[in-house]
Image: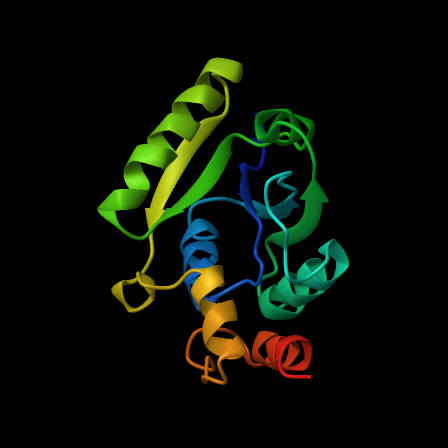
Length: 163
């Protein structure tokens, strides 16, 4: 009897990817055989970086992980997960305030496809205050974000925001 590999999907806008995201990825690959990071598109968001730029930054930031695939997706994430043969969705939690929204999302996804489970992973305490919006704002105002993103992402932020 062979055991099939367990794949998880980690969706997000990743605009840009932060060390908080990287911490969640590091935890997820310890649980799953493969983690697919997907840049999910949102109609209500106007990203700073276009899709190709975000995928590039994620690939560069995660190239040390053998078990990570980077792609993009549109539509329902549970449909994408099913297409990829995934068993789970990864969601990162920072604060208690994240839980209400994340639970609503998890329940909706469960109603859409009960076979795909949602796994919540807490970020390390060093990263609980991080989100991509804050990183973009600090960079715009000339602040140093080198402790919160990979060197490659920091470079791309500076190029984009401090022209």
